Amino acid sequence: MKLLEKLLNHCRQKSPWLFHMNSGSCNGCDIELVASIAPRYDVEQLGIHLEGSPRHADILCITGPVTFNTLNAVKTVYGQVPHPKAVVALGSCAASCNAFAGSPTVVGPLHRHIPVDVYVPGCPPRPDAIIEGIAKAAELLSHPERKPLTDEDVKDIPECGGHCVVSAVEPTVEGETPCR
Image 1 (spheres, rainbow, N blue to C red):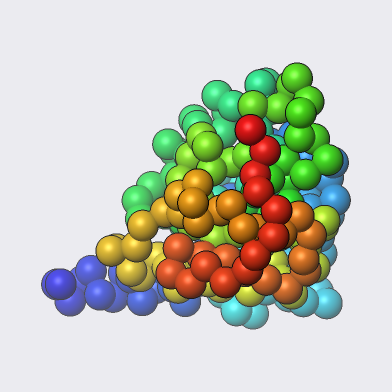
Image 2 (cartoon, rainbow, N blue to C red):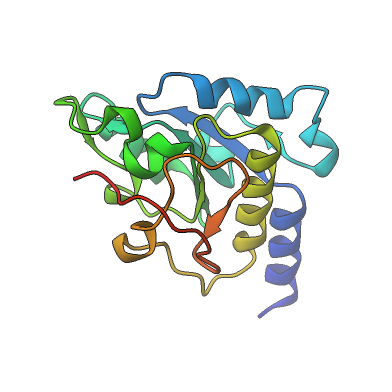
């Protein structure tokens, strides 16, 4: 690996920029994400910055199950985030559809439509769990050999949980199966 590539990977890991997208959630996860950016947790001290454009982001944070209306927007935003990128699915709805499973407007959990690198389950997840998930995603940015999670990896994610972060490197939790 060239010296410049090593430097860029180090910078991506130490100061990731996030883009947040709601794909049909109840806004509980969105409120907790904003709380993690607020002065009490102050993630900007860790170099984490919430960005307003997906074209400048390193990490895409998505909340909620994917609905029919947001499916194309999710795919478009995912395509706009430059490589290397990481996707963080916040909340149980993004992982398993949770309370929205079986709804005619829901087209499935997030991993069925775009590759997901880190799950932060919970209904809603706590801000410290969100920060841990973002830190794990930032760590994954410096590993080009990583692979996104598959359906087999995701089948054991719990519906609610709080402090468990699942990644493509270390799947560690057990629980319910995803919807559809």
